[in-house]
Image (tube, rainbow, N blue to C red; front, side):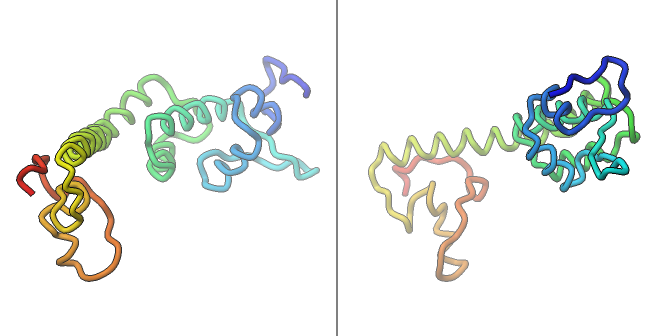
Length: 161
């Protein structure tokens, strides 16, 4: 694979993949979702501006902390085109995500705590279990499978089931 010159303004998809550590298929996927953009040469080959390296790093980091691609796309849309995201950009965008992450952490902690209590009491009753069916709310929604969502009820001890 050819190395990009330090002063080249554009990268091929292979060079971008090599420099970013992201598979070519993932780069194509990001492009199809509007997270990154390329121009096409007269030979129909993709060329990415160098700032795409930082954008890909930004995408990968945001994914690593659990931010959905739609949210990442919306965040990148706030940045001016063809400008590398800066430390200030990251600070502003990550601050906006903090509440979402805090909510997710709280939900996971409650799920962990409910799971421990439920396994400990041994009831595993689907009509009474605080984990699988808090307050039997799922029964009120009619027949069929329902989504488990720990936000339906506060954490409680299964001994009160």
